[in-house]
Length: 225
Image (cartoon, rainbow, N blue to C red; front, side, top):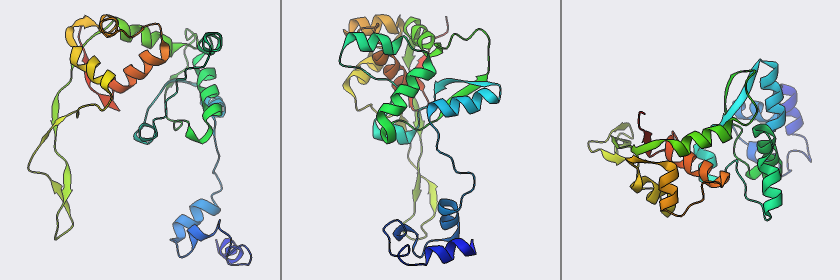
């Protein structure tokens, strides 16, 4: 740490734009950013290799609030049907790797669900999940939420005395329509047909599933068969 601090204080390093964020910063931030011995950048491919060495496998992306804010997803629509068909014929990990490389720093964060490796896995689990999503019936999920708010004087966070209906109204008109049509009587395939959405479009189906039935978008709950 002392050597790193001495190097950082040496001109022209000290006056470079790369060092400006670390001027007068906390020691822990300096150490974590500049002398972190285990820092490693991953792609989907290298992350999958690491997971495989541990006897595990990537199952599905775990979409996070940061990727949601960027509008970043692991699905893509290409300009020609031929390329789209080739892309969707790839195993899950290969498709995610293509998206990761094409989008670079605009790709979603590498957050994935993993499980113990299964011999029966054909590498296209996400497509099976999409089919099961289409064949299930859903109803709207409703609950209430109370936020913690900071007091104006003591600046401490305390539960708000009022609760709000949750989840909040979705901003996307298609997602709102899907949620409004989910009454527990119709399958998602039937709902999408009613709305004129093609169930054969894997990107469309997967994006709707992520935005309505995951912790990132808990708008629908599945009905028991």
